[in-house]
Length: 160
Image (cartoon, rainbow, N blue to C red; front, side, top):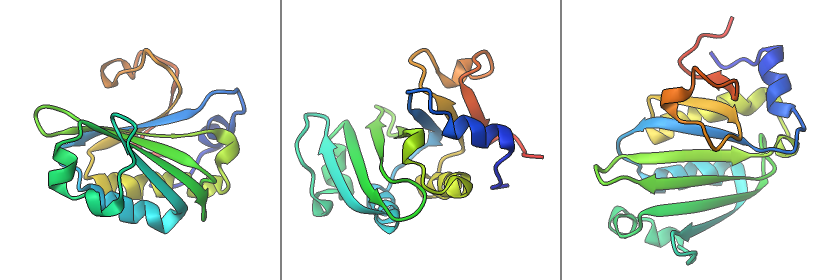
């Protein structure tokens, strides 16, 4: 279900000075070219950097090129719909899976009603099993998600 409750809407737009992090789990294999194409539909400007801060061009995002990089930072600007700007961090693990975090600030949300639809679509592109929208919290891990109040939305829960 892709609708926002009043509580989720308020938390997404809460101007508390912190960002909102969206953590995707169960990402066994990231086809970064497909993720880039999805972002290209929603943002006019995309800049990609490797773990050393070097620019990465779109044609370098093939699987062999990504296998030499342990992480990518994707800066997304001039959003066309849901977000004015955002960023996405992808880190490949030794087992071939990936940790993916999508980050935005509440003031960069231009269409709050489209936030969950965008994130569910991104979940599909990543082939993730689940995601959490949460307040920025350095102590958060999927294992502690039930213990912390920083979680705004869990894609495993059904909205009523």
